[in-house]
Image 1 (cartoon, rainbow, N blue to C red):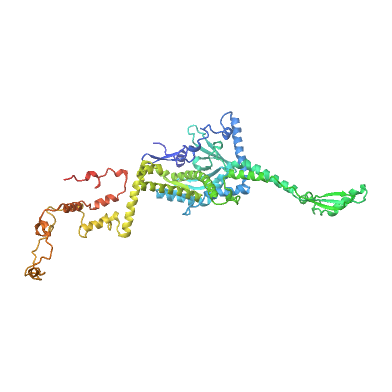
Image 2 (cartoon, helix red, strand yellow):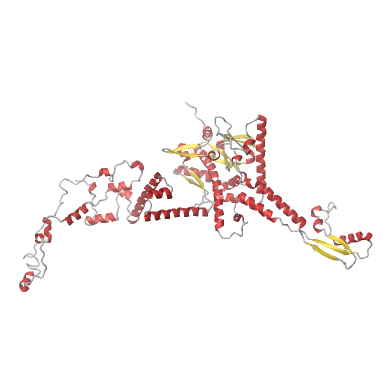
Length: 629
């Protein structure tokens, strides 16, 4: 008997493959790519790695490989250090906040994360996991912000058998290392190495949720930060801003030129005279009371340093002139670098208040849609890792096979305009399809296939679902108007067919003939009632022998006042004993062909339509039709 593996051994095996595949019914498979190998591959099995792959490759001696590994770790730390410096900038910090805000919007029901599943138990378990254990409404915001900032975010999962994930602890990306392809037998097995203040240790793949922004294979096995594209621009922008500030501080102050008339002062005494005047006009310097030294921190000598020029002769006299400060003409360079920074961050300027001259909403709507697509890409990455946490949680609670993947997670879309455009596109398709059907230009098959892009199976499924919707509407209408539930009583009331049937049978709804076995010879008392003799025109009649007085009038006037017709049998009522005319036979035949709804027919019509019931026999099959007599 094979040795029973523990929960953690089974979790290790579960996440040691590239994707998780489960059969969800029939031949349908569902694949969960938690590590996103389908998009970017494994860096140890792919040759597209260039930049970082060369830094920690396995070629060469162990010493060189060790040095390359250290070089890679140092490079990663340098990147994170630059990202920390960039986060101190007002524009970049606001951009990261906007990314986190737009990615964690609540839907119309007030939920950040939407869970879709047809298993109510799984829905309750995942609802408890994300909202009660992980507190995703508060914690998802900093997780996504750190993900956008560093390109990586690590969560340590505390898993217990029978309970699942009971807690998560964020780990610093400075202290985490991801190792892939270390086991030759399991090239997709992933482990994590922690080296920080708590010491050094390892984690299995199922113990860590690694959020990473994939997209550039040069950064594998780690993610690429949102800020990476603006890292060089940020340094250039800082240098340009510093140069602008230094220029304004050093060159912007105004200078004054003092022209002092020295008259007939001997040349040897001019310097002494000018120094005395300068000392009288300068402000008192700032002296540190403790040390008695000039406080250079408050030394404004450079700003207040004016020019003193001695003049003599002619009409020259004492005068003071002002020299304007130099104007900084390179502000366009700062704006140029700032615009490139916005392009690298992919955040519309209007979001940060830098595009006040924007006229109308069309341009902002276009930018909003582009930014929404960027947010959707981040949300897909986050949902992929949240799915991994959910699978580990369900597996620890005993769910396996198709139940393990019987759910879908989604975050709320950030752009209302984007949603409105999708709705408008669908509306245009519906209007186009309705116009083609009304004008009878194209078939329904063509419309389903080319306008709505549905396959034949999908189109057939939708047609059957439309029939099911009509049945549901009929049931709701019966309950609302008649108080009758057709699925329980197997009968309908008040429909046009019911009213027509009642008219045929004298205002009473007859017993369905197909559900009642008629006894031989008919029911007792059935058939034509007995005829009784009439006393009209006799002495027994209350009106006498001649109630209308026709005989007396004919004798008096001798005129036949009524038109004379030659009836067959001398009376219109005599046709009962004669052959029926062709018109009456047609009427009777049409009445006999009226279909009467029976319980069997109604119950058959209320059954759900499915392909598995096509072979079952019912009253509507052509094989059940009676042969013509």
